[in-house]
Amino acid sequence: MTGETDHKLRGDYSRMRPDYTVDQDWDAYKPAEHELWRRLYARQLSLVPKYASEEFNATLATLDYGKGIPRFDVINAKLGPATGWQLVAVPGLLPDLTFFEHLAHRQFPVTVWIRTPEEFDYIVEPDIFHDFFGHVPLLFDPMFADYIQAYGRGGVKAHALGAIEMLARLYWYTVEFGLIETPRGLRAYGAGILSSGGEISYCIESPNPNRIGFDLLRIMQTGYKIDTYQETYFVIHDFSQLFEATAPDFAPYYDQLRGREPHAPSVVLATDKVYHRGLAPARAA
Ligand code: PHE
Ligand code: CO
Image (cartoon, rainbow, N blue to C red):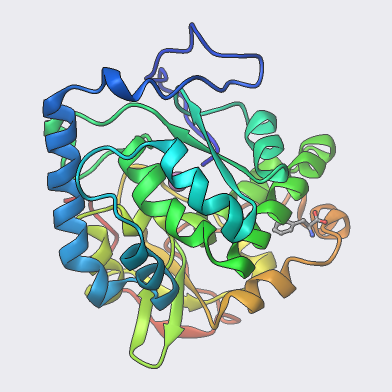
């Protein structure tokens, strides 16, 4: 994800290449880190059948990465033939333009370090568990894989147009915290939800947050919080809706929205398609 952060970044940026990639150095992971991975994985595995989108669950079942921290080269051997994507190892959050350029080239940056045991339930900054468990399965979905690449290309453009903040909100409310309508009710496809032990049920079952129909321009002018559960989730019908809504040239949208005061994350507008109106602001577990 892009970094709307102002705290000091974790991760070792001293040995990276100019494109911010590093070697995964899988042999350097300690037994306790593999053990933490297994615990995180087992917990999420017990939750995704009920709360995750079908596309996510279908792929997860074909991947075998519950035994310990996965090797990127092993996954890449499957991912390449499936959708042409490759994982690249990175020290942590990247500068916006670097991040966009990787996505535009169908390279998904995955953080190499894992959280501490104290962060089992909640972490603000993306670690390998978030990046891998949350993002990788949907890179196997052809439509979603194309969406992420289009987003990366759009990011390079937005960077030149000074519109990254608007575009980052779209990433946040779709790739990270998106919900999708299914015959079995709302499900999560956003990676920030899928890798979270608490938010995965919260986003579907809690009466507190708003659940509102996807609306591109509305999302691009809605702020977000990075350190609590979300106060609003946006719901898509399917991935083709996402892909089609984002296909037009955004330059006129940026011109239209530039300089406007963003909506607060908790606000419900008269024009919103409301699935559920939230009762209370979000609070992290
Ligand atoms: N169509 C967008 C543009 O012209 C690019 C984009 C695609 C952005 C998909 C986000 C997601 O800028
Ligand atoms: Co992410």
